[in-house]
Image 1: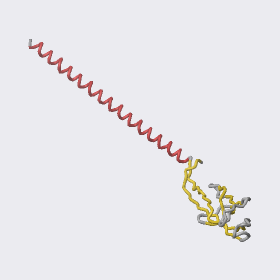
Image 2: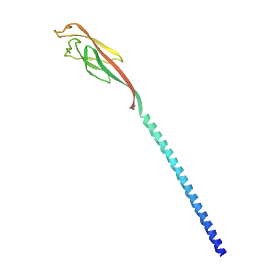
Image 3: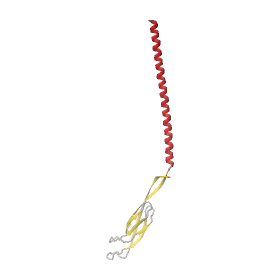
Image 4: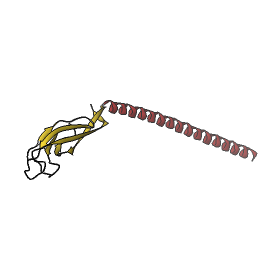
Length: 150
């Protein structure tokens, strides 16, 4: 009976040691998988960084100006190009409000500049008839840096 107990006890110890060894093997393999995942994430991060650098090198910054043309005196702006600052206008009498039939073209000015000309009212009923009146067209320029493709 003592012999049976010793053999049973020895068997239980071996079984316990075997179970501990299997558990340690699982932990070490899990650790290697975890390390492998970390290595992969570093590779992915490095790959993403190089893709970002490639994307960044495919663009450049460019300063883009936008023009706003407006009538200050004696005119009505009929058209302007916000990219180039070119414009068209019709002269208008400040007294009677008569607008001339023809249009005039102008080129952009810089920020805060004024295009100046003169106009003579053709309305015979107007107190300003035949007198020169000033025409002033203003221009405001704004700008911003924009990412542009190469």
